[in-house]
Every structure is written in structure tokens, then in C-alpha cells.
Amino acid sequence: LQEQQQKQQQGGTHKHTAAITSLAFQHEGSVSLSKLNAWLAEILWPQQDESNQVLTALLHDSTKKEQFNEHQKKKQIMQIYRIKGVVSVVHDSNHFLDDKERQRYTIQTGQEWLDQRRYIVQAVHDLWEVHPGSDNLLFESGEKRVGKIVVIGKYLPRDRLDQGFRSCFVETVVDTSE
Image (cartoon, rainbow, N blue to C red; front, side, top):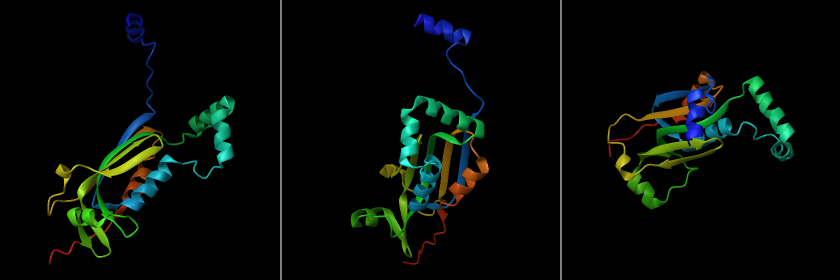
């Protein structure tokens, strides 16, 4: 432990780079869960169209893996380490909600259902989940819906990420006349 502390004091064990950044985005409204998942897949799995053979070879051949990593560094390909966020969700007919959940948590808005729960967005590298928060995190009636997300990584293209996140939002009209 003492040796580690001495190295840290001398600057020998931790190296930080200015290339790691965090970007925060906030937009008014609610997201389509299917659009949000599609966008997360697009940014977290950028090589998803690469053949399995190519990707498996990269994983098992250390020289190719190093070449691939060098290639990514030179081209400054976006690398996402973490994503955290809170969003308001609209469910479309493609997203299954059981009747009990639908009655308890949603307001019908035409063909869609506006969820009263805040949804938590989390990602680490290429794994992510979007799930409802606890029952204490419900939107109040009339409360402005806002989606917030933070992305941490290297070579993050602000405009592209902002545009992608914004594209997940849908227009909702809640009929309050009933």
C-alpha cells in the first residue's frame, strides 16, 4: 500500500487524458422507448454490421486487436464508457405493457400511452438498460416532461449525439377532457 501511495504521489500509476469528456443533453418532452433503444444500439454497437468472423478474430488475435485499437485512436472513433439519464416515456403498440401496468401507470394519448413513471437510462460500454424508476418517481399531473442524459467517453461528437437523442422524442397530446 505504501509503495502504491508513493507511486501516486510521483504520478506513476494514474494517467488521465483530455480526450475523455462528458456531455449532458436535456430536451423537453417524452421519448419513444423503441426509438431510444434503437439509438442506443446505434451508438453503443457501431460495428454491429461487421461480420462475426471479423470481430471474433479481433478478440482472439492480440496483434489484430492492438491494430484495431490503434486504428480507432487515429480515426478518433467515438468510444462511450457510460451513459446515465432520466426520461419520460411514451409506449407505442410495439411495446408490451400488461393491463394492470397500463391502467396503473399510463394515460392513453391516441394510439400511444404516456407513462407516469420516470425511466432510468444506464449504459456501460456496449450494455444498456432502460427501466422504470420506483413508484416515488412518478411525474405529477401537469408537470413538464424533460429527458436528461449524460454521455461519458472519448471523441464524442456533441452535435451527432444531441441530434440522435432529440430524434427519440415524440409529440404527445394528452386528452384531459375525460
